[in-house]
Every structure is written in C-alpha cells, then in structure tokens.
Length: 478
Image 1 (spheres, rainbow, N blue to C red):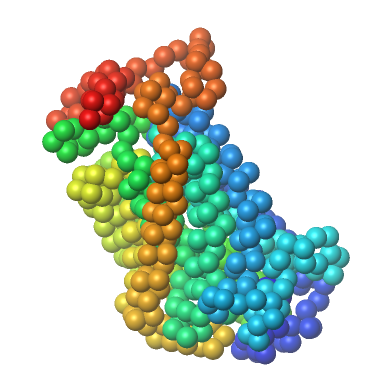
Image 2: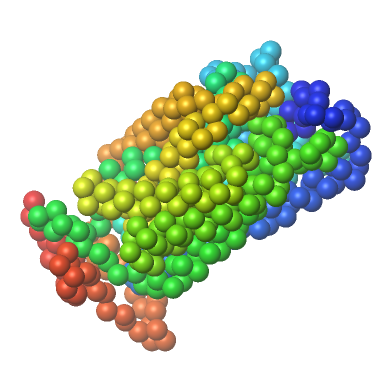
C-alpha cells in the first residue's frame, strides 16, 4: 500500500532511498496518522451535533443514533470491501492481484486476510493509514446523513451509507485520488485534498437518493412555494460545524504522505511534494473567505454564513497544495457565495428538500473546486510521472465522478423504494422518529413539549403538527 508506493519512487528531489528509513522515521509517520485519526473523530461528533441542532425536537435522538450507527455499518464494510477496491482498481476495471501494474503489490496487501491487516511488528504504516481512509469513509456517509433527516428509515440509511462509504467514493478515489490511478497517470487529474472525490461524489449520490426519498410532509405548498421548518437549536448546529472545522485540519493532514527521509518531508496523495504549512494556510484562508462569501450572499443568515465556511474550504481543497493564500481566499469567497445561490435554487426550483444543504455545500462546491484547478492551476505537474494538470483533465474527472455518484445513489434508492423500505410511514413522520423508535415520553417531564412551528412562504408562523397532519391526509387522498 503506502510503503509500496514509496518503493516505486526513486527520488523526490534529493530523496534518500526508502530503504534508508530509520525506525524513528517509521514511528514518526505512525504517530502522525494516529493523531489525525483521533482528531478526525471531531468531524463526526460535529456532524451529530450539527444535525441534531437543525432537526426538529421530535427527531433529535434518532438523528444522533443514525450518526453513531454510521460508524457501525461503514467500518466492517470498508474493512472487507472498501480497502480492496481502493488498492486493486486504480488502473481501472478490472484488475486483480496478478496484474503487472505497479499497484499489484498494494492490491495483494489490501485484502482483509493479508499480513498487513493484523498485528505486524515489522509494519508501522499500513494499518494506521487504513484507519485514516476509514474515517474519510465515515465522512462521506455523514455528508449524506443530514440531507435525509426526519423521514428516512434507519435501515435504509445504513444500507446507503455502506454503499457510499465502502464502494462508491473509494472507487473514484482509486481512479483519481491515488498515485497509480488511471486519471492521475494519464490525464494529470488533480484533487489533492478531495474536493471532488469525497465531497462532490457524496453530494451527487445524495441528490440521487433525494429524488426518490421526496420532501418532508408540509415542506412545499400546493403552489410549489417553500415552507421552512424551524431548527431545534441553531446555536448547537453552528457549534457542530465548528467541531467539523477543527477536525478538518486533521483531515487535511491525513491526506498527505509523510516522508521524513525525502525532501521536503511531505507529499500529496499523488506523491507530489508539498508542505504541511501550505495546506494549513489554504484551509484557514478558505474558512475566512467562505464565511465572508456566505455572509454577504445570504445577507447575514447564520446557517448559511457558517455553511459558507465549509463550502469555501471544499472549493479550495482540490488545489490546496498549490494555491497562494490570496487566491484561496478569493476562490473560497466565490465558492461560498455560489453555494448559497445553488442551495436556494435546489430548494426552490428543483423542489428538493435537502435539510442541511449538503448537495450545494458539498456536491456543488466539490465539483467547482475541481474545476477551479483546471482554470487557476493548469500546467502544474501531478504525480510520479509529472503529468500536467489541465482544464480537460479536470472536466474529465467531473464527467466521471458526477454520474458515478448520482446514478449509484439514484439506483440504490430506487431499489429501496421499490421494496418499500426507504421512507418511514406518514404517521411516524408526523409523530416524530424519537417517540416511535424509542419511547413516547422520551423528553418528558424534564424537558417538556416544545411547540413545532413552521414558517410559511409569506413569513407567518403556524402550528407545525397541525399543518403536517393536514398535508399527510391530503397525500393519502391522492
């Protein structure tokens, strides 16, 4: 796997042979990835907090449990299938352990029963690097999670999470987010910190699912106008995003390869040289620019201001190893502003009920980030073959990953819908998932019942429970 990739590189500008790595160097790399894995848990604590705040009170516990069980579902499926997919499919389909391609050794080491997947005193890197990718897989599923809030069945969500987290995103990562990927070696595709391969594909998959899942009861009027469901706790939603942002620094670090015996000591996933400082500057300026763009585009809306920070970072992640801070700031500001408009258009024109705006913030911004590289970093050499990045290579990536994500999400949700297991019954949605899945008085008497209010298109407040009950009766009549 990662040690095999290093063995293919004879030099990285004054690099010493890989065989000269000292034990100190090996332990340094192991420790680095261990702490990125630890800190990336904050991303998932953040997702749980973020979604629990934006959901209505009657769905908070179900939302939290869904995030916890994401880990339970994706961990074993990624172990048994995901890592094999990544290591064995980089040159394209099909490839097996007997392939003559240089990734064949990594493929053999990517199967669950290999020596690299158990206690091995001679191997300091493979297991810990696998765990970094595992947490990336949790993230892809969690991106989808918030969009489906309040009406998806838990079992259906976990199936979708396993498909997205252990099959779909890791396949596109094999093709375009690896030193041996066919898109990297042939077309110079450049997405250093996963704008498209994680966020873009997850957003596209989510959109495919949402088409079948449908909006929450009462979300749209008969005329197609949008109602807004008030969040349970907007402040805790913003806190959740701040936790996600903190974990993003570890996410960025885990996307790099530490090479302490090779100048400059760090490389991207493509093994192109970089530094930890350069990507840290880009993420910081990405947040700042994203907050700025989100604030002005949404006219100060708190949710879209902080979501703009996330969109901004995603928009500059693909070129994080090459962008100057000023360029990162400007691109993140533009990405965030466009994400606000995209989120509004998806909700109002497409009539897609994406509770947290994941399709716009992750999907739209992710693919836009890939496009930015083709415009502002064309000609930058990518990978061990130093293939120049180009607008055509980046567009090829978008043309490959967008249908891969969308069609797999659409088809998976179509099957679940045909089996009648995708969405909870209307009466369960009206009562709230918490009272049905756990206990009727889960928040009583300590918390009490909080009135459910819905904002009509003209801004008036109405009783939410009464409204959704009436809307549900009309749906039954149809």
